[in-house]
Image (cartoon, rainbow, N blue to C red):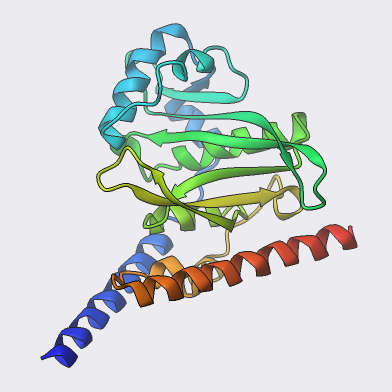
Length: 255
């Protein structure tokens, strides 16, 4: 009976992986910013938007950020909001960021961009809105603010989110247990980092490359509950992180 159950679980995991790969392939088409602007007005956040942003956050995550977070979005050049033309009462999505001082790969203090929020209403998902909002902020951080790198947090079990960020060149650099403590039972996070040499302003998405990364990604194959399997996942993640950091070091040295 144990063997049968194990085979059943493996089959379910394989089916889940196949579904994830299909979903990634279906969502890799890039909608150009010009087309997005025909549907949405992208601008700075205004005071009148805060209430609707809070509602969007709550609908997506079942909670809100700290109260002091929202006023920092107003007229923030590192934040972009999208609303439909002629419908100022609707917030379709927003992306916000800030600059933090952190040690770089050579332990020198440098400016890092931190994506602290990227939210898109389910009603407007799969329209390229999230991609373009994030792309706007990334370009502003790299091209105007000249940050060393950009990082963010993503739920460890959010396969779609991880693959989305990989399209931009983000790599997994760290794991943070129980980072999303406010969610039920707490949820672990992955820190994903984008170095400037991995991002181009007019990059194209390679579907096959993304799919291959998904197949090799530790968290895709997770779905394991006992301690021994979790330890193996952690060790694999640490190896992958070290490999990514070494690769970045080699790239920086060559440059």
